[in-house]
Image (tube, rainbow, N blue to C red; front, side, top):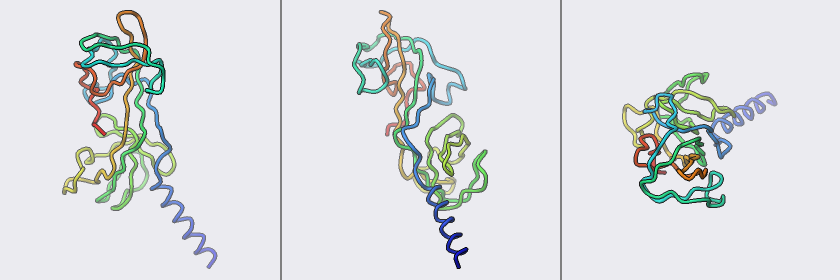
Length: 191
């Protein structure tokens, strides 16, 4: 009887560990491009501001505002970071496997997608650790459809900050998302 209780408790703990959300925030550093169009290449270079922007000494609006970037002003991108404050919660609808993840995800399982990468790639929280993998059939699955392996029950919250230098030589951090005219990769999904 003791062995059965111990086994049941162990199973419950494993199930809870699999479905528990990841520790956040999660940072991906040195990101000057964040989409499939980059094909692994950085997009550091000259970008044109689409709107008035505030540049801060460090990433995050809690930092001191340092200078302004005017609409139409060209800046040079030096570095970047994507900060994940909330991961996507994906509910598995039909059995599926993920690259480099042992076993199979069963209907009803929860997958915490922390970071989105190109070509279906993702960083997921699995069994208490971050795993880089490929999750096919999920990107546009916000409704139940026959082609979907899982459905996104909760969208994540992500911020993309880039370190920039203006023509006056000032260096600061600005939000990249939706703020640049020639930023084909800076259009993170609105969350």
